[in-house]
Image 1 (cartoon, rainbow, N blue to C red):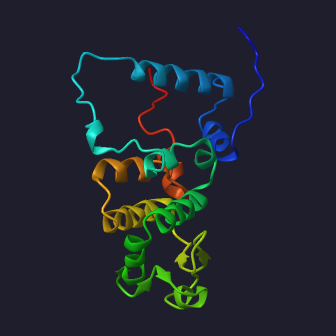
Image 2: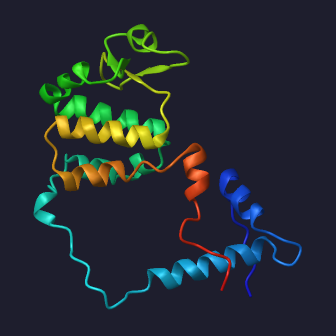
Length: 189
């Protein structure tokens, strides 16, 4: 057996720690989870339709290319959210203007000023969209960010295949992430 030193995100370590027992240490937990992941990722005989590649543009300046770039992939959830909105403002400025009228209930998700967004509720923080004079609600969990981005991308006339690729780049966060981090894995054999 080979010993490796690896760095593990604090939240992932906490999840591993929860699964340890006096007879089942960190290494055992990781090995068990990796084995389960490898077994579940092996090909099966089930037919899986391939995504319609014609529904996803492959142009160099496409939103799909943008979210698949190494620079984008290393961003946090909030920064991915802001980066996608910044990309839309830069490459789809006419469609992006529609976000100023976007509403869900009384909450203001986009505004011309930080104050306009933050005054729509309590405990709200707003951030400026890169390359834009528009501010957006920033105190959202990643699930809400995905929903909001899906709505905005739809407003900007993106196809469902593109929308799904973009929103799938934003992982779960907070309590949702902790609940789902090992979804589908069981330590029972």
